[in-house]
Image: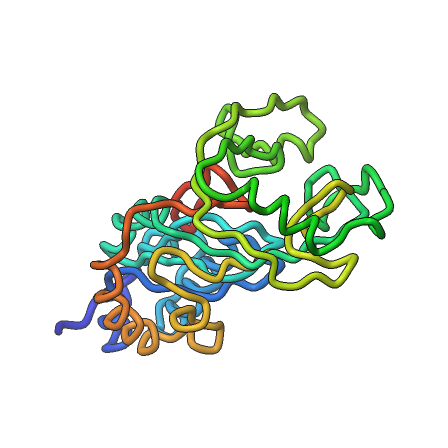
Amino acid sequence: MAAREAGGVVLGKSADKLFSLSGLFAVYKPKGPTSAGVLNLLKERLLAEAGVQTDGTRRNQVLKIGHGGTLDSAAAGVLVVGIGKGTKMLSTMLTGSKKYTAIGLLGKATDTLDATGKVTEEKPYDQITKGDLENVLRKFTGDIMQVPPLYSALKKDGERLSTLMKRGEAVEAKPARPVKVYSLSLQQFQPPLFTLELSTCALMQELTRTKQGPFTLEEHALYEDKWTIDEIARSLEHCTSLLSGEPAHKKLKTEHPGETAVSCEDK
């Protein structure tokens, strides 16, 4: 393969291999950074390994890369990434199955419904039993109507509702929408920590996406030490066979109803 040029500089084999990558793969997004921030770091790592030096604007033009569904900065787990022509496939990830592990905290409620928000209510939780929780979970399985939280990725006039809420602007709740929850189970019950919610107030302490489409956290997500051209090439080759058998159904998405597939330039 012939050497390529970027910014007038002739590049070598590593750059050739990088720019030939195409398809979908998964990375692990840690708690803290945004999904866009993780993609920007990934892109910087790959371009640096390939010997391509660009400023921020030029970097977004040189290497085409995007993700298939936002994970909130407070959440962790599987983030599906498209590279090259694979960016055109990212919309399929929005209708694929998703799976999460959530840890809840009984006795407190916040304005954001998670641990990052301001505490708005506190109630006793000693009366709540494991059986109480399991009875409630049955009401949230199958076909249900879900009202998207105000702190979400849904947009009004081009801005996320969560951004508007943090600025103190008035935001109207979106209408309930149908979702299908295929399974919901209580993994642990050690008050005040649990997995979901009940007749006390509660908040979501932690959220980890363990599956998106056919990509699982355990088998497919590349951690930061594996963000290399060769590792991604191997992952792309392996993941191609996964995509053919993924059913087009949707799991309940607890962190960002209405999420969209975006390029890494999107914030």
